[in-house]
Every structure is written in structure tokens, then in C-alpha cells.
Length: 246
Image 1 (tube, rainbow, N blue to C red):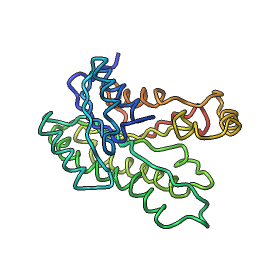
Image 2 (cartoon, one colour):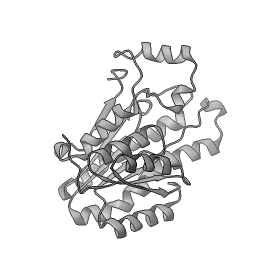
Image 3 (cartoon, rainbow, N blue to C red):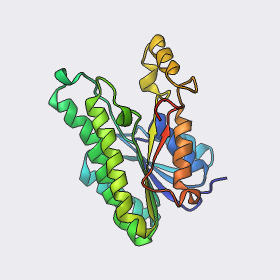
Image 4 (cartoon, helix red, strand yellow):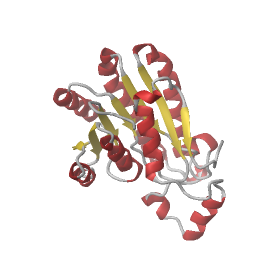
């Protein structure tokens, strides 16, 4: 069994869906989880984790606010003494065909999905370098690999995360820090449930395993990458897509 006892994990976008599942899974394996989300959104998830015997705390964070990111990391270090795992999960989508896409929708998606991951990663990097140990795991998307009509902003942001991780992995490998990406396919979350039944069925038909993924499918992969069992894996993109894209 993967053991993360004694590890401290910071998870962004930890209020629902994939982020909430990641926070629960890391806590279940013994990590102390700092669950970050806007406002008080992560509190319900944290309460559930604690009820089940896990260690977690909710923090309010707008990941597009760089000074706030630095403050959250500084506070976590003051209370826990270290940050071992960063999961860049926070993200948004503002879909529209390129011809009709507003500049503010492009900017918002890039700021939340890509630039915020840069801010969070840079904030934890110095303490990880001092520790000579760390796991940085970023949640991309199959859309960043194969593209999708109406999502040029989202695809660009998610593809950018892959390039960032691959470059950073080479920068910090000598200090015992691994940097990897998880690229989910169609996952059964609030966003995908908003699709019509016919559309969901159409997506499922395109997936060799014949079903949408679950947030736990993604969380299990993240937990593995965060563990000592994955110590020799870095600079990789792990697809969790049921065979939808290979």
C-alpha cells in the first residue's frame, strides 16, 4: 500500500471533482493535506476527510493572485515545516469557437490554468530544493494532447502545462524533485454531467474502455506519482483516459 505518512501536500482546486478526490486520496494514505480553493469551498471536503480520520485543512486561495499563493505556501511551511507534494489542479474552461472567443476569456483561462501553476510551483520550489526532495504533479487534459474544437484557450493552457513540466523536470531532477503530469480524458464530474445524455453516450463510445473515468481514477494515479514507488519517474505525462487518446 502506498504510504504518505509524514508528507505534507498542497492541492489546488480541492473543493470538488478531481481536486476533492485527490485531496481525499492523499489524506487516506497518510498525508497532511492543505486543500486550497476559492472562499470556503474546500471546507466540506476537508470536514469529510477529518471525519474519516485523515489530516486536512482548508485554505482560501485565488490561484491567480500570486501574492496570495506565496502567503499560503509561507503559512503552510510555518505550520508544517515542509511541503512535500504540490498538485496543480485548479482550472477553468470558457469554451467558444476561436472566431468568437473574447480576449478576456482567453486571458482568464491562461491565467487560471497555466500561469497559476507557474506561481504555485515557483512558490514551493525553494523549500523543496532545500529538502532535496519533492513531488510536483500537474493536472493537464487529453484536450492538451489532441485538441478539441471550441477549446483553443483550454487546449493551449493544458498543453503549456506539459511543456512546463518537462522543462522543469530537467532543472530539478538532481535535487531529488520529480515533476510529472496527469492528463485525464473524459471524467465524470459536474462539468461533464452538464452534457446531455446523448453527448455523454457519444463520448463513451469513443473510449475503448467504454465508460467515462471517475475522479478516483485520476486521484489514484496522482497518489502513485506522489509516493516513493514513483521515485524514478519524472518528466512524464500519464494518460488517464480509458484509451481515448494514445
